[in-house]
Length: 306
Image (cartoon, rainbow, N blue to C red):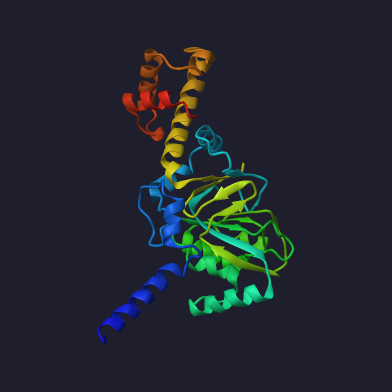
């Protein structure tokens, strides 16, 4: 019995350290993101590869949205943001859900957080679990006055931990100072000088709603001046690779139409073997756009999800 108790206690402590950073279990995250077959974080969150995050910065959000729409993913985009600058952000979603505060609930949440080693107000807790490549996404129910869940100090912390900024369905403060943080951007409903008031963190790495979009932890977030797209992790490779092809196809098409080689009707229809061969020859002259085999081109043309 003496040898069993320390082992049992260690297992409980280890389990607590794993689940304390989320309010749903690892099993639930695995269940909700079961279509993802790649690497995962210890808590179960999908870990989209870094190179895919980088590639996603160079695609057009319109093309990515079209791929999702054609696959039946209709609730993944939200527009109408105010931003710090026009920098594009991509990252793996770390989600947070805030609600209006209630004294008894907030007391219990903060007490439980203290036992888990959490410090400060609850709006600082999501920042503590960020890692490089993450993008902090918060459902702050659109609150503006009293809804600023981030100021300049937290913005600096977010950037240092994740290398990214934030997407908040709510507000932020200290815009003049945040503008001086190189490499940081924030997509918010508005900026407001108030602090966080009468709101509490109710979910961390849980499914959330951002306007008309659903977001799961680990989703690929693509934030552009046009709007924000939340790509399910298992769709990320297909969305990015297809959007990359559309860029190549469009640039090839623009050039061919300008030079009178092909008509717009020929470019916008299923390509003939002659056009496919011309495209592959053209692509070799533009290595900055990547490479593509004839088989890959045939596969992409047959999908027509773009």
